[in-house]
Image 1 (tube, rainbow, N blue to C red):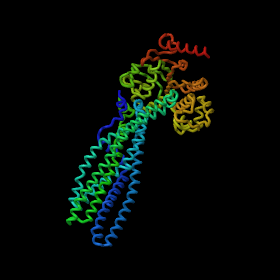
Image 2: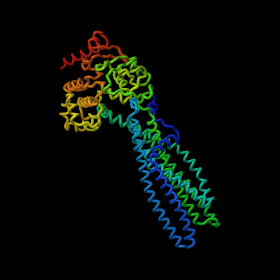
Image 3: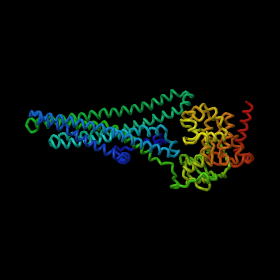
Image 4: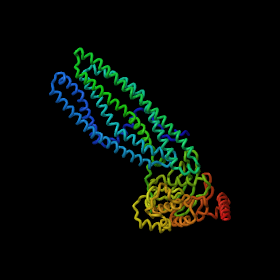
Length: 602
């Protein structure tokens, strides 16, 4: 599969104007109708005041300067001063109002997108780098916000000015207005010629910026590996290639824009030249007053000013359209819902849940064709402790993934208390199933916040829970106790301390089924004893599933299920499986041999 196909959110339509995207954008603006209508009213008012300036200037020439009437000159001057003052005040208010709308729209879109991202299935994050998703929430939302705060209302005002100027021109002199209008087909040709190229280039800029963010996120997250294996130089070269690719696309866009702007200026100069030539001839023959000619030239100057402004806003519009397609494309990604049984709505209250788990002929593949679980069937009784054993790649973690519905099975059924888990809401399902993983994820915050996951639990109750688990030694060696600051991903904690947080967290969460995935790996012997004792207290009265490569951690389980290449090959107690002399017996012999070698070395 090609990289571009794999990350399909980078594929955008080639449309210059997408009505669907525009309608979605407008739906956000319509949430603030009062502010929007106020902005449009101020735009219309400032447009009328703007159009009065050249007309009054021409009037002062014809009826004041040419006739030597000082009163007309004074009145016109004061009128122009008042109009400009009022217009500038309205522009200030309009600018503030537009910026406020833009910021509110950004807030709404970012919150909705973040909420949607939280609802996406785990398979989506397997295929999409974090850097690209972060780009949608930051750069792309900012580009859309810029459209509202500095683009759309301003462009509407520019369009009103252009229409208004043509209306006044036709009222002043029909022939000069037609001459001015004759240059517009040239502007249309220029806009269409450069528009598509600039849009495609801008989209490429956004795509390559997302590549930079993804690469940065990956490298900063994996900095320890990069430094340990001396990959700094090679990663620098790779980033240089990605960065250079982004630079080339930026240069291409600047080149298009550098030609686009002067082309518009040339058309403006052509219009001024034609009107000046024809208007001067008409004035010399007495068919046109000097004031009208001067007013016309002022209107032409004012006509191309909003056109230039629209051109300058063109890149904002293109960036916002490209960003909108990306953001709305991400919003259209299907949420973590059931595709097999519509509208799952049944919940399982914790108090009514017994803990019976049953797999019936379950088949599962991450890519819909290469099955990692093949016709798996087993039953776990309420309160029973079961261990999943097998070599790497045998399907142990995949069983956990489908049981918690992080992924959906392709064939077969999984039941909880005789209820198909696809008929149980995922929120309710995950209230009754808890997972303690080898890789404990911690948030930047205090120890207290990481244990409670920011729920308001009082310290006495929290300390009582920790004491009941026998894990107070971990608290006692923390510099500030529950107020200790945890760095990002728990970098300032040991593996045992991270597992302490995970076990306490799951005990407070109080699920009826607990899954422990390599919970005691990479832990020193003393911490392991504390953690193992805590585990025994946590699983008491609950259905528990253990996943471990170290067989010493699962010998106490009621039942052991042995997996090999996605299939269940053996099932029974430790003694029963040893008597079978199958795969489990071989694994156990290897384990015992390693233990003897380890003791001999010790």
